Image (cartoon, rainbow, N blue to C red):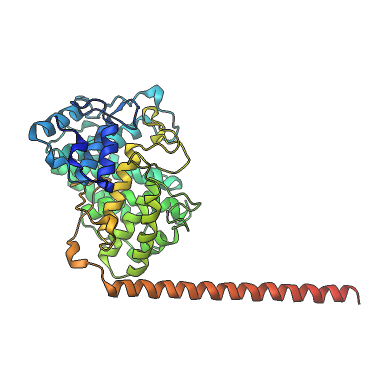
Length: 421
């Protein structure tokens, strides 16, 4: 059977990533993967490996028999009663996160297996029975009203799960009730969004950062269904405001595979929708590109954050030590590079025929004709003007600071002289 690494002949970033993916494979004749080299088998690992090969243009090079075998492996974990994909990592005693319940993790795994199956030309063997309650409008309304925006990040995941499952039930299972449920879903989201940010929860429940990390998820459902978003300019402003000096999108620095993708996905999608702050968005993406490059390890994969161990939602079999690559972070980082390539057509590292998932999911994006939007001298000049304006503003701020400090010294001296009078 063809080795994944056999298709790469140069030390380009895609070739490096393919080498890492192969290092997570547990047997050259099977489609079982660990989440990190030397780790245990996980269904997450196989799903992320499949999507990565598609993003890098290699999945289509597998034979039909190989693709069918991979899909059969993924489907072998599906529970016929519920429709869940009960991978070997879903061991109740090994789920260590109090925040992420067994139900949440099971649905999270399902939303990654589904697009992987689709890329392989297959669908689940059994219906997604576990998702059927969401087609009951009374149940769905009660479920929606129970969302807690204090943890908008977690709820954003939950909302993507439901939106993605309803689209699957409508398009794949042909369930007639699914569209009405989607209509209710969007109506509720439209009514609860914060118009000041275009996000959910930022109106007194959580920080803008947490609201954005959550909002990225349900916004994917908006983009897929081509629904207009609320306050697109505000979305851009919030995303730009979260960029740290290191280029990542974590308010305290260091970035994060999720945090960086969440902000960049919003910036790329809003860039395509309007002219608002396009030069600023391009500059932010260029800064982020360097940040992401620094998170690639010598083995070709990526880490979630530097100098920190990783475990995905408390699922024990996904754990990796500090500075060791894992398939989740590599999958999301590569997807983020593919997103940036849609805009930064002049960046050598990004000149590649990247792919995206073709159904609503994390990893999905609606690509455009990059040849029509190639960057040139005009765009570089726009960016240069923004940089000059920023430098002038920084100098003015520094000058004002000196004046304030000097005024404070004079005031203290005057007060001191009065004390001795």
